[in-house]
Length: 86
Image (tube, rainbow, N blue to C red; front, side, top):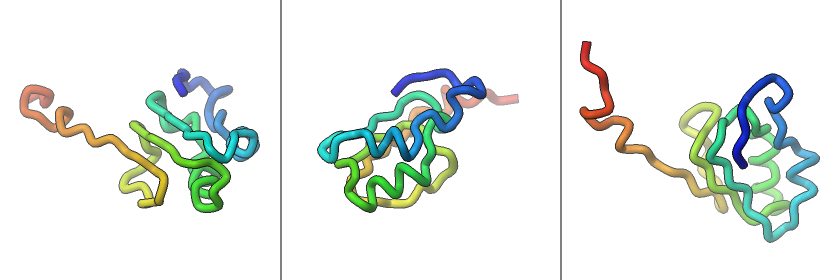
């Protein structure tokens, strides 16, 4: 999934959209956290409605550890070359 976050895409990936996915489908989000209804996503993972999810963005951390969910870590964002010293 890749989308901007104007008001009309906030919560775009809803419970209805997740229910429409096949049970062997994986949801991949590298866009913005705000486009996903994370309560619906977590419910879909817990009930097995979808096979899994891979997330690069989160509404808040730490996100629940759930079977079927892969998350990326971004150690490079903490590197001294990425931090502006004032």
